[in-house]
Amino acid sequence: MTPAADLPLRALGKLGAELGSGGQAKIYEAPQLKLPDVPGPLVYKQYKPGKTPPHGMGKIINLRSRLVPDAAKLQRLDASTTWPVRQVVDGDGALQGLVLRRIPGSFMHDLRLPSGAVQTKPREVQFLFIAPDLALRLGTPTPTPDERLKICRDFAATLAFLHGELGVVFGDINARNAVFRLGEDPMVMFVDCDAVRVVGDVAPQLNAPDWDPPEGTDVLTRGTDLYKLGLFVLRCLTPDRNSSINRDPNQARGVLDVQGLDLLTTALRGDPAGRPSAEEWHRYLRRALGESLEPPRLERADLDRTIVAAGEPLTITWSAQEATTVEATGPGIDGTAVPGAAGTGTIVLHPARTGRITVTARNQLGVDTVLTEPVAVFDVPSFHDLPVPMPVLELPRPAPPQLPAVGRVLPEFPRGAPVPLPPMANAVDAWAVPDTPVARDPVALPAPPPLFGTGPSAVPFDFAAFFAEQQAAGDSAADQEVHP
Image 1 (cartoon, rainbow, N blue to C red):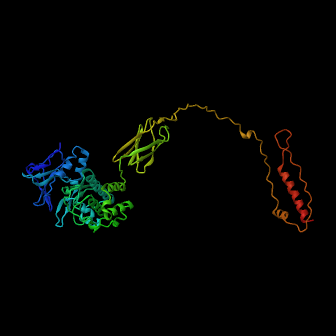
Image 2: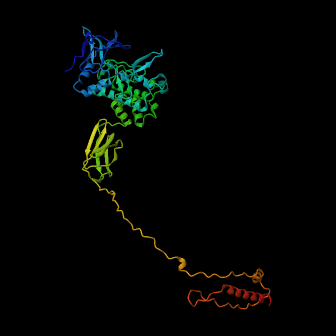
């Protein structure tokens, strides 16, 4: 059942503190108001006199009410916008204000004012255009290049949702009509959505300074939204002192690739009818971040063998589309995942039990699974050394042999008298070289002494007589050489 779009002021209950004030309205807490189709705390936007939209907001509120049966789309709208959920009217039905979802705390931050006071304010996208060095001095966020791409991605995705699902023109896109947060998704939330118009409405919309399209018209269209989207991408990705007024796509060289520069140039300088759509920007920025655009498709998962010994490697060769990771699981296998961005690859496993292996491709949009043919795993017998006790052998201990005394076996060594040496003079003369060669007479040697022994025929040997004869023979020969 579609809830009624109108509420009387008394239905809001007692209002809380004032949260903010602008040129058109003031924002108050509405802590006592609860709506069955709107999660979270609510606020009341009270228009100032003369600032009430003349066309009313019933048509815009009913766009959200149509999404109530589709929970996913309704959640998408509530997560990325502060869309009007009720209009508050007086007793005559005149519009007085709107009921909105309160901006979550993750989109707020503490801002130090020039006076030194600290206020909690929405983190508006205008802080993205400040030069990083100045942002550090001011204490404002300084996103990384990847975070800036994600912010642009979510900005384009939200605008694509409004154009495609709700059929509206946002119109007044500017530096204060969107807020952002870091580290969580979605990273961008559109605010002041009461300025949107259904496509085809000719009601005028506002243009903020430095965001006016080159068409110069007060009737805004999807084409003007796309021009302002291009300005946002340029200014978010090239923060500098003059980024808030920058309209030159060439300033993004070195930040965007050729395809991105072509999209940006077409958005800011091309024909209004040919500007890239918000969905084109969304798809491009997701590709630039390495993200998938659709659920993965696992095209192949082949085994290099189906029989393997336990503990031995098994290789799976796979190919997949749009996969962030590819994972293999199975009996006796620790889950193993590899990056899937390359589109093809291998996974090496060491299965411990027989069974089929499950190969799964994943991304943020879904999974795709393939079951391989069975793998037979067999155990290889192992060999271990067994301890065997060795027998203890008692070796015999022989007694030492009794050897005969050596002196009883060998004959006694002959002992003779000492033999005197020849005189030194005779020895020198014997070595002298004669002046005239003289033939030497042969010296007759005495007969060898008889063998000694212990038998009865043994003759005692007289060493003294033997050496005396040798000396006499030597003296006679020496006399013959010296005295011819």
